[in-house]
Image 1 (cartoon, rainbow, N blue to C red):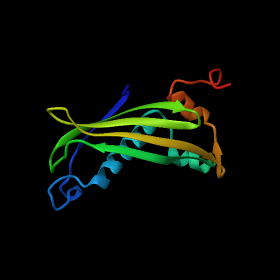
Image 2: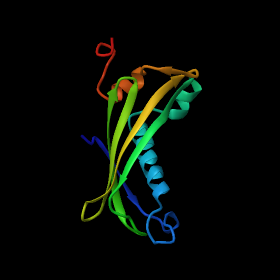
Image 3: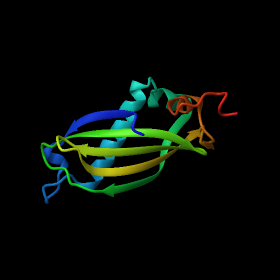
Image 4: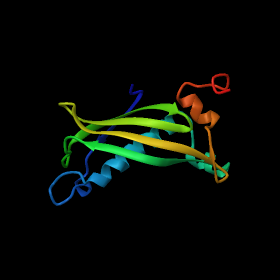
Length: 136
């Protein structure tokens, strides 16, 4: 299910008064993982934006399981599939070395071309294993 992973380490300033990673910071980890996945796949958000193509988050569902603390190392993993007009990222964060699940997330994204919702886009279809012959 997960096809990409990225290593991280918690920085002190990402934690709240309780000494754990603030809930909003997890979304930064998830987004950074998605952006690195795209860059590793030779997809540039800025180049696409210059062409009038934007992938935007439509919905975020996060289940918080185990808190990360300052200095913790962890792995952020993702898998992506297409559901109708949406590209759905299933993501998980696992704490090292015990591989405890910290969060599970489902991120739904859509493509907007020149300000209009699109049913998909060939560059993103390739990321989920679709090609033009599968999308007709």
